[in-house]
Image 1 (cartoon, helix red, strand yellow):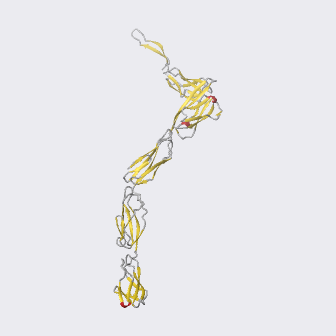
Image 2 (tube, rainbow, N blue to C red; image 1 turned 135 degrees about the vertical axis):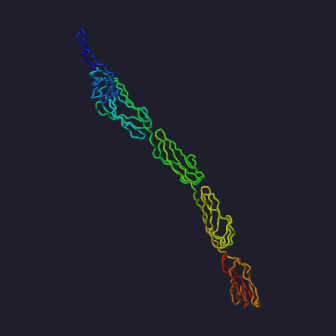
Image 3 (tube, one colour; image 1 turned 180 degrees about the vertical axis):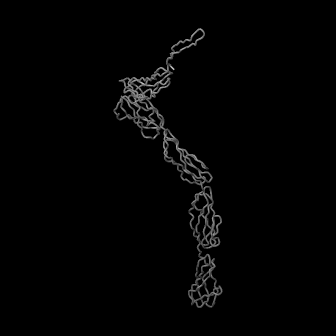
Length: 463
C-alpha cells in the first residue's frame, strides 16, 4: 500500500567487530487511478423538466464518487435536473482518493434545450382506424415551437388550442391517424430572439388494420353436376380486389362457379386483397353438388270415349332432358301404350304414368294423370220402315245391327195394329189390323263399352 516505513539493517558481531545497525525511510506514493469516465443517460434534456441519470465507470480503489455541475443545472443523487433556461451544463464526477489511490475526476457535457417531451406514449402500437392521440410537449416559447409530420398520409398534427401556463409551458398536440405506414414527428423550436433553432424528432409506425369480417355467398348454394352458382361478398374493407378459389370438382370463372360431374362439395375461398391500410381477409362457403329432382308439370287428366282413335301423349314440362317413358295401370280395360301412343282398349279409367330418366344433374322423377274412357253410344243400323199385309199374320223382324252386345227390346206404339214378342232371342211381329205403329228397338247398355241407345221405324199394315 501507499505510505512510509523505516527500513533497519542490522549486522551481527563477528571476530573483532561488534554488532551494528543502520536505518532508511521507505516512502510509497499513492498511485493514479485507472481511466475514469462519467456519462449521462441523455446528452440533451429539456429545460426545467428534463432529467438525466449520471453514472461512472473505471477508476480504482474505494473512494466515494460525487457529482457537481455548472450551467444552472442541479444534481440530486445521481440525477441531473435541467436548468430553467437554455444552457450547457458541465457535469464533473469526482472519485475520491483512498489509502492507495489518488483522487481523479471526469467531465461530460449535457445540453439543456427548449423542447421537453412530456408524454409521447400514445404513439405506441398504433393501427389504422385508431382514434387520434395526444402528444404533450413543453417549451419556454410556445409561439416558436412547431410540430410537423413527415408523411401526412400516415398522420397529421393539430397544434394545441391553448398552452398550460407553467415554467415551461405545456401543450397537447393532436395526432390524427390517416393511414398505415411510418412517419416522423419533428418538433422545431426556432426563436430568432435568442438565436435558438433546434429540432427533436421521433418516428412511429401505424400498422395495417384487420378487415371487417368478410362474408361470401353462393347463389344457389346447392347445384347439380354441371350447374353453376354466382359468388358474391359483403363487408371487408379497403380497395383491394376480391378473388375466388375452390377445392373439389368445381371451376371458377370470375364470380361464377361451375360444378363438375362429381357428387360432393366444393369449398370456395373468397380473398379480399390488402391495400395500403388493410390486411387481406378471407372467408369460405361450401357449395353442395348433388342431383336434384326435376319438377314435372303440364301433364293433365285426359277424357276420351271408347272408339276414339289412338292419340299421342305430350311429355310433361321438365328442366331435365332425360327421356320419358309411359305406362298404363290397366291395359285390358282402359288403354295400352306403345312409346308415347295410347290405344284405347275399353271404357273405364286408368292411371297414365310418365317417368323421366335421370340425366346430368337431375334424378329420375314421375308424374301421373288419369285417363277416363267414357262408354260410346252405339250406332244402330239396318233397321228400316216396314210395310206388311194384315193377312200375313205374324212376321219375323230383325233387330238393328250394333257394335254393342247389349240386349234389344222391341216395342210397338200401337198394339191395336201390332204387338211384338221375343222368343229365344228372335222377335215376332203380330199384325192385328190395318194401320200404322212406331216400332222402337232399344238396346241396353252392355257390360263394358257401350251406353244404351234406341232407333225407331214406322210399321204400315195394309189389307
